[in-house]
Image (cartoon, rainbow, N blue to C red; front, top):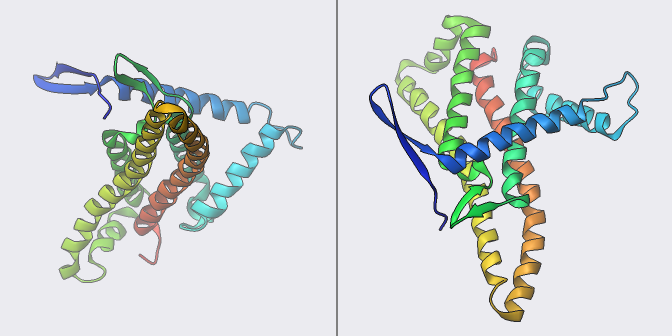
Length: 242
């Protein structure tokens, strides 16, 4: 399996372990997401005159219709949460596809791949999403409604409601990690197969081409699934019927 380089340092007297390849790939992911967003929004006109603007509008409308309106009231919350959904789906889509298109390794250490193949990253991202849903619950509905989401079905159900928050965190993070990590493992296996004789090279290269194309599709789908699940959890905190 892949080796990783770790930096161990101290912060406020505690040992802090930093996964250097994950830090590098995270920075690259953020930079590429920024470049992608700037590229498709750099020529916004009242009347679209470029494929870039068409792409931006298609993405914006898709997120509005299939993520936000499907879970929360657009009139009440849509405009305030639109940017959040667009940022989340763009960041994860870029993160998922980096490892398919680019992989940089040196001396047995993989320094650039899909950062979503690192469970620490997906867990941290899912944790931020879950914390944001709690923040939004307080912000938009107030403490009374927020606490009511845990007691509305009876006080006996409250412990299960609290437990559900932890299961949501785990399922949100592990679903994304599992799908991307499994894809990268298979890519590595196909790459190894390509070095074993002529028939291995034919099978390996053919498999790589097919699986890379499929992995790109899976990466985008997983970005959508993560985003829509995030807004589903959010709807439990801010929708009137919950």
